[in-house]
Amino acid sequence: MNECDFFSSPIGLGHVTRDIAIARNLHEFSINFITGSGAAKMLQKLDFKIDDVYNPPSFIVNEGILKNQT
Image 1 (cartoon, rainbow, N blue to C red):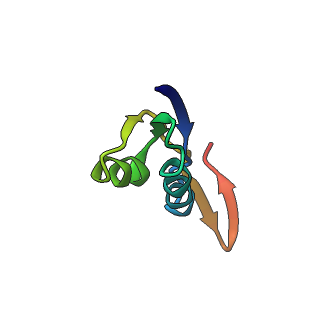
Image 2 (cartoon, rainbow, N blue to C red):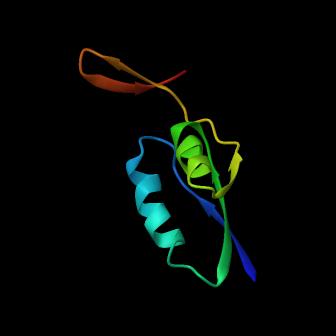
């Protein structure tokens, strides 16, 4: 069986839910997700192989303006 490393953004859960649908249709591959945070927890509960290695940057919102962390 072919192996596939699949990065899924852990910022929110919308990315990972769509990626799960894709992975479930790649029958010829053994999927390993590279992700982090809540996405890793969700994938682990669904028995996917995961590498919980990505820590997304935090963001600061000040008076409605999004600023990335410095």
